[in-house]
Image (cartoon, rainbow, N blue to C red):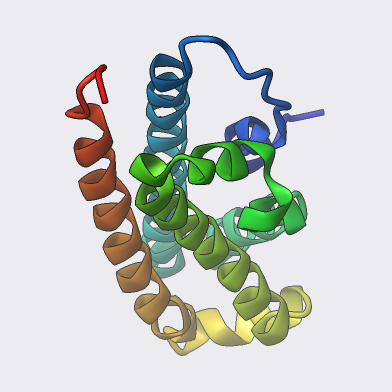
Length: 170
């Protein structure tokens, strides 16, 4: 059985946090892991859509298979993607210096939840996916979301840079 890419990348959100005495260093380490997870998840999703759209021009079966695989992968996206459900996002948000970063990550992951909903509403089965592929509907359907993803990731990266320059003293 293949391990879900999204499930693997979202593991950090499920991790229980044991606060350490060096809280700032710990939060910076967690921020680095979260930022990397967001980057990898964005790359995975963009790559899937690119491959699916290229395949639809040549082989609609391959495109459908890639999208159905993504939809199966998105089944692993659940409430842990919400800020109030993730111990790591809550832990970061407690410190006002990391609050904006935690919020940007939460917004990014919420965008992935929105993708799940968008695809589930518009592609209930492979027949609907075939119909969308014939009319370039998949690209139209996900185009706006892909732009949103780009904006969310830019915000995560900007907030990440801010927390990385925090001095170790108050």
